[in-house]
Length: 67
Image (cartoon, rainbow, N blue to C red; front, top):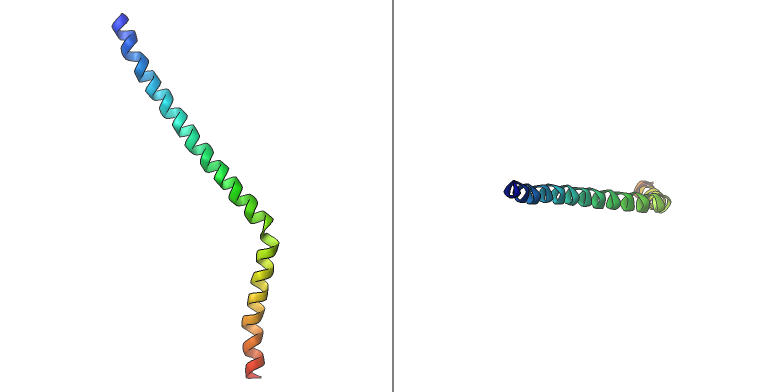
């Protein structure tokens, strides 16, 4: 009976360690996703303005050169 307790102990620890590693991995992915989402939200106006200016230049510059 003492031998059974010794064999089940490490197996349980391995399972717990695997679950802990899985939780750590998922929490790191969640933290990275939140950081990216915050960065995109903070820089949305700047990106929209830059994209609008580039689009206007690409549309209006050829129109002025042709006309």
